[in-house]
Amino acid sequence: MLNDIQQKLQESLSLHQSGHTDGAIEICKNILTQSPAEPNTLQLLGAFMKAKGDFKAAEKFLRASLKENARQPHVYNNLGNLYYELDNLQEAIESYKKATNLKEDYADAWFNWAIALEKQEKPDEGMAHVKKALKYNPKQAKYHNLLGLFYKHKKDYSGAIKAFETAIKIQPNYLKAIHNLGTAYRENEQYEDAKNCFNFVLNNKPDQVETWEALGSLHQNTEDFDRSIVAYHKLLALEPQNLKIHRVLNNMMWETGRHDGFLNSYVFAIQSHPESQSLVAAYADELAISGAQDQAIEVVEEAIKRQGSHPELFHRLAQLRLKSGDLEKARHLMEKTLEIVTDNDEYYTDFAELLLEEGDYDYALEQIALAEKINPDFQKAWSIRGDCWRLKGDERYHWLCDYENLVQPMEIKVPDGFANLDDFNQALAQELTKLHITDVNPRDQTLIGGTQTIGDLYLNHSPVIQKLRIAVLDAAQRYINALPDDETHPHLRRKTDMIRFSGAWSVRLKSNGFHVNHYHSKGWISGPYYVKLPKEVNESTADGEKPGWVNFGASCYGPEMSKKPERIIKPQAGLQVFFPSYMWHGTNAFQSEDIRMTAPCDIVPL
View 1: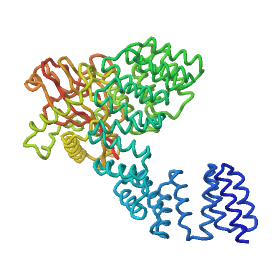
View 2 (view 1 turned 120 degrees about the vertical axis):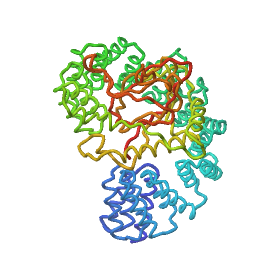
View 3 (view 1 turned 90 degrees about the vertical axis):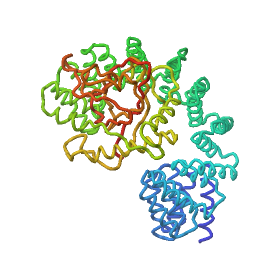
View 4 (view 1 turned 180 degrees about the vertical axis):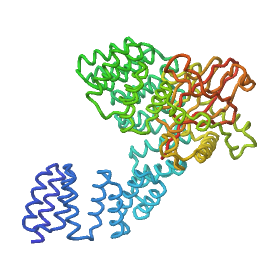
């Protein structure tokens, strides 16, 4: 009987491996009619059900197998993998733990446990577990690859490079490890080695999207813009609907003066995917930002004719109509949008913005209340609410926008290795200058007459920039600690010691440059660090024109006489100013032969 079951199980396994999983399942079910508690059959049936995508049945059969025989480490490992795919990481970890308790040298279970810890963003624990896997099986390339990723996460690029190189030595054509080695070389500023890795991957696997992106980014950061454009076009040929790369590519083309073919990537993508509302909406946005408002409207209207009613297209057309001053058509389109979609905080907030423009403050506040139910921390919604309260004369505006207490200039502490902030700022300005590689201001940002760095500044591992990151983080924690407690206030109720940067960049303004008044829609705390200022700013006084000063509270809504700053702060090198992300802020223009350089950031709770 036992031999017969084993023979049948082997037959079912062979069927599954040859692609005939239904036949394999049928054999297992036949066995269970005779031996309903046979654990090997139950666990194999669980594996087959998982392969078919029936995760509920897979869990049932794996657990039934363990009920009959709890000493099956491989079944616990398979159950852990099932839970991992279901994104139930805690149950996955519990299963891997049971597998390794039963079999201490079960290297694959230690490895899978490490992967789950990586997804939980626990790199230290994950590294310890993958090292356990390597202890029991040091010749497994994928273990060394994962170890390299943990080293890279800890910014130990030398350790990462060594681990990836070991993985490749074990498995010479391990393309994933070669790609990862390229990213580690890039972070370690070994740019030629990085290019060689990426090119090797692409020569062997030309459809590797993440490697085309890495190569495009590398060429962009090393100012080889023509090769960067080629790499991004290769990526978009594989993924025409990758909106992130469309934006990166076209922004780079614009900012580096390569205007031939500007926005053509959207045109080609829409030709191959005319049904994509997201592509049409993004293309229309880009046209509008570039000043082609009428063409943007035409593009969306043509898409609506082709595709019929679609909320994303109605919403985009409403925004375009609003910007062109056609409030009546914009309102009609927003109402049609919200008839179709009732769970989108952005749509409600944009409708509120339109109503604010019309002066219908009470109805605008009703829309903001609906947006708040969906996303209570959406900063744009709080900014619009503040404007409604201000224009209604509601005292809650002063509670929400307490410019004296919630806006705080703070001097950072002198970073280690520097005698004073002047020395630090001089070194920082030199590093940031290297990163300002474009010629004109970005089309989609608030600065006029200057340039902005590409990517997340604090991901740059320059020692000076990392010292700034640490100093600003320390200042942010001091700012947060000094805030009062108020569970009813949208800024104060988020107080926490656990914070992270959600974005950081540098801005370099030239003579007559300034920031238009704006807010940061998806942050919590925002603010600039002042690196370098012209003497015209340094020598200015409060009773003068305040060139280059930062102002707060000057909204773009309401009567012209109401669009005045409520607080103005004179910048000083070494000063970091923090404020709620929803607050309106901007800068005054200045005239000088020198530049005004800052390093702003956005901060959110973990």
